[in-house]
Image 1 (spheres, rainbow, N blue to C red):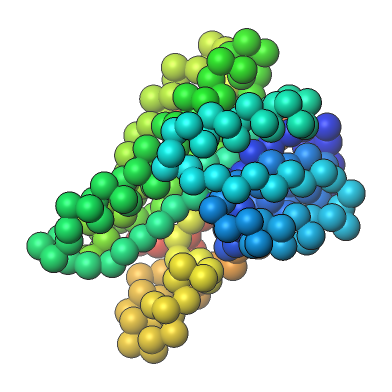
Image 2 (cartoon, helix red, strand yellow):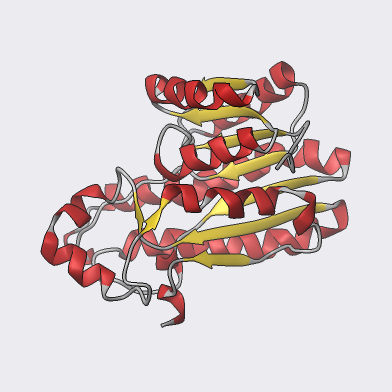
Length: 250
Protein backbone atom coordinates (compact mmCIF):
# COMPACT_ATOMS: atom_id res chain seq x y z
CA UNK A 1 0.00 0.00 0.00
CA UNK A 2 2.99 2.33 0.45
CA UNK A 3 4.91 1.29 -2.64
CA UNK A 4 5.94 4.91 -3.34
CA UNK A 5 6.79 5.95 0.21
CA UNK A 6 9.35 8.76 0.17
CA UNK A 7 9.18 9.24 -3.62
CA UNK A 8 8.54 12.50 -5.46
CA UNK A 9 6.35 12.42 -8.57
CA UNK A 10 5.34 14.93 -11.22
CA UNK A 11 1.93 14.25 -12.78
CA UNK A 12 0.91 16.39 -15.75
CA UNK A 13 -2.73 16.79 -16.66
CA UNK A 14 -3.47 16.26 -12.97
CA UNK A 15 -6.43 18.62 -12.88
CA UNK A 16 -9.04 15.97 -13.75
CA UNK A 17 -9.76 12.57 -15.27
CA UNK A 18 -6.98 10.04 -15.59
CA UNK A 19 -4.31 12.45 -14.37
CA UNK A 20 -6.22 13.16 -11.18
CA UNK A 21 -6.82 9.44 -10.63
CA UNK A 22 -3.10 8.71 -11.01
CA UNK A 23 -2.16 11.55 -8.67
CA UNK A 24 -4.55 10.31 -5.97
CA UNK A 25 -3.29 6.74 -6.33
CA UNK A 26 0.28 8.02 -5.92
CA UNK A 27 -0.65 10.01 -2.82
CA UNK A 28 -2.25 6.91 -1.32
CA UNK A 29 0.91 4.95 -2.14
CA UNK A 30 3.04 7.45 -0.24
CA UNK A 31 4.44 9.84 -2.87
CA UNK A 32 4.79 13.60 -2.61
CA UNK A 33 3.29 15.26 -5.69
CA UNK A 34 3.90 18.09 -8.10
CA UNK A 35 0.56 18.60 -9.84
CA UNK A 36 0.71 20.25 -13.26
CA UNK A 37 -1.96 21.46 -15.68
CA UNK A 38 -3.24 24.79 -16.95
CA UNK A 39 -6.17 25.14 -14.52
CA UNK A 40 -4.99 26.22 -11.08
CA UNK A 41 -8.47 25.85 -9.58
CA UNK A 42 -8.81 22.24 -10.73
CA UNK A 43 -5.29 21.42 -9.57
CA UNK A 44 -6.14 22.79 -6.14
CA UNK A 45 -9.14 20.46 -6.05
CA UNK A 46 -6.85 17.51 -6.82
CA UNK A 47 -4.50 18.65 -4.03
CA UNK A 48 -7.48 18.87 -1.66
CA UNK A 49 -8.52 15.31 -2.53
CA UNK A 50 -4.96 14.10 -1.92
CA UNK A 51 -4.72 15.82 1.48
CA UNK A 52 -6.29 13.00 3.55
CA UNK A 53 -3.34 10.79 2.62
CA UNK A 54 -1.01 13.23 4.36
CA UNK A 55 1.29 13.71 1.39
CA UNK A 56 2.43 17.09 0.14
CA UNK A 57 0.81 18.14 -3.12
CA UNK A 58 2.42 21.10 -4.83
CA UNK A 59 0.21 22.94 -7.34
CA UNK A 60 2.18 24.21 -10.35
CA UNK A 61 0.06 25.62 -13.20
CA UNK A 62 1.88 24.62 -16.39
CA UNK A 63 1.32 24.66 -20.14
CA UNK A 64 3.11 21.45 -21.11
CA UNK A 65 3.30 22.53 -24.74
CA UNK A 66 5.70 25.32 -23.69
CA UNK A 67 9.18 23.89 -23.18
CA UNK A 68 10.23 26.68 -20.80
CA UNK A 69 7.28 26.03 -18.50
CA UNK A 70 8.04 22.31 -18.41
CA UNK A 71 11.64 23.01 -17.47
CA UNK A 72 10.45 25.39 -14.74
CA UNK A 73 8.06 22.68 -13.46
CA UNK A 74 10.92 20.22 -13.05
CA UNK A 75 13.20 22.79 -11.42
CA UNK A 76 10.56 23.89 -8.92
CA UNK A 77 9.63 20.30 -8.07
CA UNK A 78 13.23 19.45 -7.25
CA UNK A 79 13.68 22.64 -5.22
CA UNK A 80 10.44 22.54 -3.22
CA UNK A 81 10.02 18.78 -2.80
CA UNK A 82 13.68 17.89 -2.44
CA UNK A 83 14.15 15.66 -5.46
CA UNK A 84 12.42 13.83 -8.28
CA UNK A 85 11.86 10.12 -8.81
CA UNK A 86 8.83 9.76 -11.10
CA UNK A 87 7.49 11.63 -14.11
CA UNK A 88 4.01 10.93 -15.48
CA UNK A 89 3.43 12.54 -18.88
CA UNK A 90 -0.36 12.44 -18.98
CA UNK A 91 -1.62 15.78 -20.29
CA UNK A 92 -3.50 15.49 -23.56
CA UNK A 93 -6.10 17.03 -25.85
CA UNK A 94 -8.30 15.75 -28.67
CA UNK A 95 -10.37 17.19 -31.48
CA UNK A 96 -12.45 14.81 -33.57
CA UNK A 97 -12.74 15.59 -37.29
CA UNK A 98 -12.07 13.95 -40.67
CA UNK A 99 -8.52 14.64 -41.77
CA UNK A 100 -9.70 16.50 -44.88
CA UNK A 101 -11.54 18.96 -42.63
CA UNK A 102 -8.69 19.45 -40.18
CA UNK A 103 -6.71 22.68 -40.07
CA UNK A 104 -2.92 22.72 -39.94
CA UNK A 105 -3.23 24.55 -36.63
CA UNK A 106 -5.12 21.56 -35.18
CA UNK A 107 -2.27 19.25 -36.21
CA UNK A 108 0.27 21.47 -34.52
CA UNK A 109 -1.86 21.92 -31.38
CA UNK A 110 -2.50 18.22 -30.85
CA UNK A 111 1.06 17.14 -31.62
CA UNK A 112 2.50 19.81 -29.35
CA UNK A 113 0.29 18.83 -26.41
CA UNK A 114 0.14 15.05 -26.91
CA UNK A 115 3.63 14.27 -28.22
CA UNK A 116 6.03 17.20 -28.01
CA UNK A 117 5.08 17.71 -24.35
CA UNK A 118 6.20 14.15 -23.61
CA UNK A 119 9.55 14.92 -25.25
CA UNK A 120 9.84 18.17 -23.28
CA UNK A 121 9.14 16.37 -20.01
CA UNK A 122 11.59 13.54 -20.67
CA UNK A 123 14.27 15.97 -21.80
CA UNK A 124 13.79 18.16 -18.73
CA UNK A 125 14.14 15.30 -16.23
CA UNK A 126 16.95 13.52 -18.09
CA UNK A 127 19.97 15.22 -16.44
CA UNK A 128 18.64 14.62 -12.93
CA UNK A 129 17.50 11.02 -13.39
CA UNK A 130 20.68 10.06 -15.23
CA UNK A 131 22.83 11.68 -12.55
CA UNK A 132 21.11 9.73 -9.77
CA UNK A 133 21.06 6.53 -11.89
CA UNK A 134 17.42 5.74 -11.16
CA UNK A 135 13.94 6.92 -11.99
CA UNK A 136 10.59 6.07 -13.52
CA UNK A 137 8.91 7.68 -16.51
CA UNK A 138 5.32 6.74 -17.32
CA UNK A 139 3.91 8.11 -20.57
CA UNK A 140 0.15 7.95 -21.05
CA UNK A 141 -0.57 6.83 -24.59
CA UNK A 142 -3.90 5.45 -25.87
CA UNK A 143 -5.44 2.41 -27.49
CA UNK A 144 -5.87 4.71 -30.50
CA UNK A 145 -2.10 4.69 -30.88
CA UNK A 146 -2.52 1.11 -32.09
CA UNK A 147 -6.13 0.91 -33.32
CA UNK A 148 -7.59 3.07 -36.07
CA UNK A 149 -10.78 5.09 -35.67
CA UNK A 150 -12.13 7.61 -38.20
CA UNK A 151 -11.87 11.20 -37.03
CA UNK A 152 -8.89 10.57 -34.78
CA UNK A 153 -6.03 10.63 -37.30
CA UNK A 154 -4.00 13.35 -35.58
CA UNK A 155 -4.67 12.12 -32.06
CA UNK A 156 -3.74 8.57 -33.08
CA UNK A 157 -0.57 9.75 -34.81
CA UNK A 158 0.50 11.59 -31.67
CA UNK A 159 -0.25 8.66 -29.35
CA UNK A 160 1.50 6.27 -31.72
CA UNK A 161 4.48 8.58 -31.45
CA UNK A 162 4.31 8.35 -27.65
CA UNK A 163 4.46 4.55 -27.91
CA UNK A 164 7.48 4.69 -30.25
CA UNK A 165 9.26 7.28 -28.09
CA UNK A 166 8.66 5.15 -25.01
CA UNK A 167 10.11 2.05 -26.67
CA UNK A 168 13.28 3.78 -27.80
CA UNK A 169 13.84 5.80 -24.64
CA UNK A 170 13.37 2.67 -22.54
CA UNK A 171 16.27 1.09 -24.42
CA UNK A 172 18.37 4.26 -24.36
CA UNK A 173 18.02 4.86 -20.61
CA UNK A 174 18.16 1.24 -19.43
CA UNK A 175 21.88 1.49 -18.66
CA UNK A 176 21.13 4.43 -16.35
CA UNK A 177 18.74 2.46 -14.14
CA UNK A 178 15.74 4.40 -15.49
CA UNK A 179 12.59 2.59 -16.59
CA UNK A 180 10.40 4.19 -19.26
CA UNK A 181 7.03 2.60 -19.94
CA UNK A 182 3.69 3.64 -21.39
CA UNK A 183 0.18 3.09 -20.16
CA UNK A 184 -2.38 2.98 -22.96
CA UNK A 185 -5.97 3.34 -21.74
CA UNK A 186 -8.94 2.50 -23.89
CA UNK A 187 -12.20 4.41 -23.62
CA UNK A 188 -12.46 5.80 -20.10
CA UNK A 189 -15.27 7.91 -18.66
CA UNK A 190 -13.74 11.38 -18.23
CA UNK A 191 -14.63 14.98 -18.99
CA UNK A 192 -12.85 14.60 -22.33
CA UNK A 193 -15.04 11.67 -23.42
CA UNK A 194 -18.29 12.81 -21.82
CA UNK A 195 -19.75 14.38 -24.97
CA UNK A 196 -19.17 11.22 -27.02
CA UNK A 197 -20.75 8.89 -24.49
CA UNK A 198 -23.65 11.27 -23.84
CA UNK A 199 -24.75 10.53 -27.41
CA UNK A 200 -26.45 7.12 -27.29
CA UNK A 201 -25.64 6.30 -30.93
CA UNK A 202 -21.95 7.11 -30.56
CA UNK A 203 -21.75 5.38 -27.18
CA UNK A 204 -23.20 2.17 -28.58
CA UNK A 205 -20.85 2.29 -31.57
CA UNK A 206 -17.74 2.76 -29.45
CA UNK A 207 -18.75 0.21 -26.83
CA UNK A 208 -19.19 -2.47 -29.52
CA UNK A 209 -15.41 -2.31 -30.08
CA UNK A 210 -14.77 -3.26 -26.44
CA UNK A 211 -15.05 -6.99 -25.67
CA UNK A 212 -16.00 -6.20 -22.06
CA UNK A 213 -18.85 -4.04 -23.42
CA UNK A 214 -18.20 -1.17 -21.05
CA UNK A 215 -15.94 1.85 -20.74
CA UNK A 216 -13.28 2.06 -18.08
CA UNK A 217 -13.27 4.18 -14.95
CA UNK A 218 -10.46 6.62 -14.23
CA UNK A 219 -9.79 5.01 -10.85
CA UNK A 220 -9.01 1.72 -12.63
CA UNK A 221 -5.91 3.35 -14.12
CA UNK A 222 -4.33 4.28 -10.77
CA UNK A 223 -3.13 0.83 -9.58
CA UNK A 224 -1.33 0.13 -12.85
CA UNK A 225 0.29 3.56 -12.74
CA UNK A 226 1.50 2.82 -9.20
CA UNK A 227 2.96 -0.49 -10.35
CA UNK A 228 4.87 1.20 -13.19
CA UNK A 229 6.27 3.77 -10.75
CA UNK A 230 7.26 1.24 -8.09
CA UNK A 231 10.18 -1.12 -7.58
CA UNK A 232 7.92 -3.99 -8.68
CA UNK A 233 8.44 -2.92 -12.32
CA UNK A 234 12.23 -2.52 -12.15
CA UNK A 235 12.79 -5.21 -14.82
CA UNK A 236 10.28 -3.68 -17.25
CA UNK A 237 11.20 -0.93 -19.69
CA UNK A 238 10.22 0.25 -23.15
CA UNK A 239 6.83 -1.43 -22.87
CA UNK A 240 3.27 -0.26 -23.50
CA UNK A 241 0.51 -1.81 -21.43
CA UNK A 242 -3.02 -1.57 -22.82
CA UNK A 243 -5.76 -1.18 -20.24
CA UNK A 244 -8.71 -1.16 -22.59
CA UNK A 245 -11.22 -3.90 -21.84
CA UNK A 246 -9.76 -5.99 -24.64
CA UNK A 247 -10.19 -3.36 -27.38
CA UNK A 248 -6.65 -3.69 -28.77
CA UNK A 249 -6.87 -7.49 -28.68
CA UNK A 250 -10.12 -7.78 -30.64
